[in-house]
Image (tube, rainbow, N blue to C red; front, side):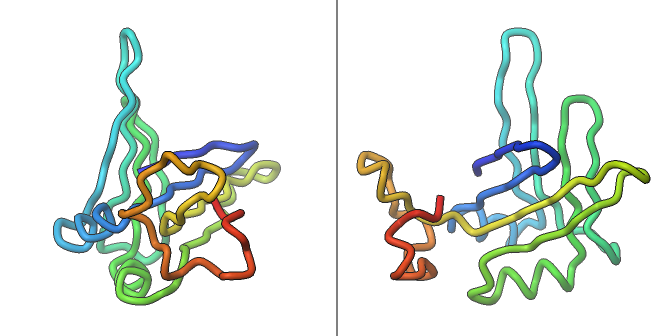
Length: 127
């Protein structure tokens, strides 16, 4: 699973095998180890009505509603997008997408990416 931060957004990119794990187990997670800490990040299907982000104890969790998650898991829909209002002046843009192959990284293993969903006109500029 890939995780990207930019300004006030967080983007998760999910490979096929991770999508299957999410579908079968209700969650998928990964972690990045630092010298004295570990950052864990996960997607979790939960019985809630809205996408809900959480950050606690070095763990980022995005809770996905069951219906929304199932609609995304079982279709060719590329992503789930949600703008969360943090307060009057701040928002968090949450993006969860199926991972596409990158043509500009020829050495990267593309076997676990969603090649079938890539728009042929994009010329690989989708990652």
